[in-house]
Image 1 (cartoon, rainbow, N blue to C red):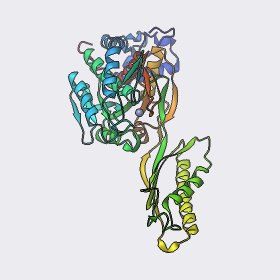
Image 2 (cartoon, rainbow, N blue to C red):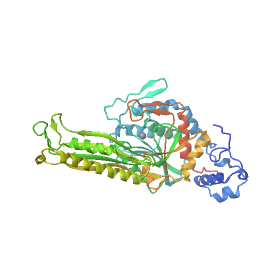
Image 3 (cartoon, protein in one colour):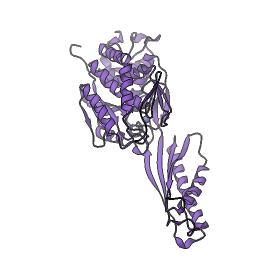
Image 4 (tube, protein in one colour):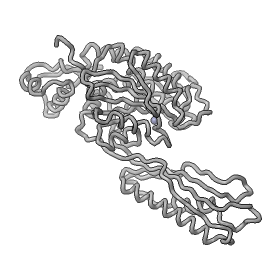
Length: 449
Ligand SMILES: [Zn+2]
């Protein structure tokens, strides 16, 4: 826990005389967070040591940090238990109920909203403002996937164990640590297990949370997956589209020569995958799911294709979306032009938007990022800025401060049946979340101070 350099937000700090300009800015941020007027604290009492600002020196914060370090087994077990409750997008109810029970066991009032998000509230001294910590409940795995957790040494293996078993375990661990340590924040802390992050969930859970709390919300911390090596401050924009091509359908032998929707889809897809996309701004596409046809000896009446498009740049994304439409249109035309028997009907096609994640960036001078950086400094952790597509896209696109971070430990194989998680070092991730959170929520001023 000890660092060589003095740290401003959490550690013992020297007097103002020795502080750099950046330092002074940080102290200013911290004074704001703790609800103290900058003038009287930084200026009038400039000669006073700043230990009173320091979060980690507060006994209750200390107690919460200690609880997180000493209860890794409990947290691991809750992670396994929650992971073993299937929760594909749109079927998160059972897992949501389990998280709600854990919140309530900590004496936190919790409720479910209309679409199935579970929200627990730790009331602050100023409940006109709040900070949201969210972890998504849903997985990409169908309900019948075997999600039993296997243990190999310290390693836990199961689909969804890391994404987002880690985030959910961290959420309930935070609830317990805050409760055990009797922490009272200045701004209200909302802990939410949200639905609909993955796939066609289209961030519907986070959209609903932002709708509900928008006017009070000062920052959002999204816990997604494991690790402590990154902080997502840039929201990667994406579009998900579904191509649908339909035709009359018929018999493979007697109707041969009729237009075939699968042929048209293949013709259009081959054109599309030859589209050149720039390496910078990084732009990607994925043909992710194909459906269509009813039997091997029938000319299908329908073909469907789901495509995921992403780019660091909105314009590239729009260009790619038009390229997809043009290629499909051309594929359909090729098929119709080449049909031997045009009297038996023609093809229709459309492209449906099935998901859209807006982009956005967290300002580099935001209080939330400063708070995370201060937590990293205090814990001796290093992390890099990342661009990614997460629940944080929604607040970031609306200009609300948000980050997405891992909740500690190590994981791999996300979205595959081989997904794994290793909890070694997870306390670092949990403490990082707690300190970053309390840095922006602040602590209620206790009586007698
Ligand atoms: Zn995730």
